[in-house]
Length: 266
Image 1: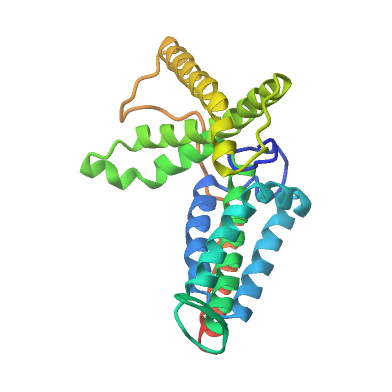
Image 2 (image 1 turned 90 degrees about the vertical axis):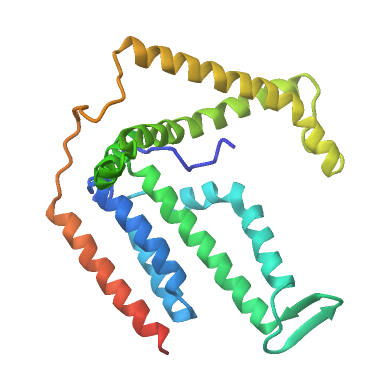
């Protein structure tokens, strides 16, 4: 849990950190679409090169990213195994038993899904590591301005997301402290079967939920004491400006999109 990176922010001075948050949000969304457009190994090589280039530009070490993805690797492998074992028939059949098939088609799709999960998680993590939660909220509020015409509470949604991102690492750190305290009292979270391990988490969940509710109450009191009001006429302390470097990133993205579309026809 202490190595979980999503929601954390690293205050570095890189070109990725200096990009407009609206630009990074739109690029991240379009990047996810681009990942699902890829359908062969050459297109995935282009996406991997694009991702590694973005990480390099952020001056964040690749090993730091890989250690942060490690807590999610079991979820990724579980999804990959489902695709591998229950894929439809296609190509050479490597192993068959009842309704379980391991085929050439399933192996290729499982590899694609593994790469997709890995790329999406890495790019989403890069977004939160290089953008402050308040900047993400400001960028989302700016991008969702047209929804105000249909009475969508844009500022409320942006603030909720900002608070959620801000408290993900805080709750993770709190869970780690509670687990250490429970271990000091003789609780072993990794002993026994699946049901026994799940039962051992009960002493963790109750104090964690109580801590989360207490933090939420303290935050609401602090916001009310500072005069926070949810309205459409709120002013912004952070003024977002589109720079030349933001335009350059879209030019690079357009080049990558063109390469992916060309690779799809091969």
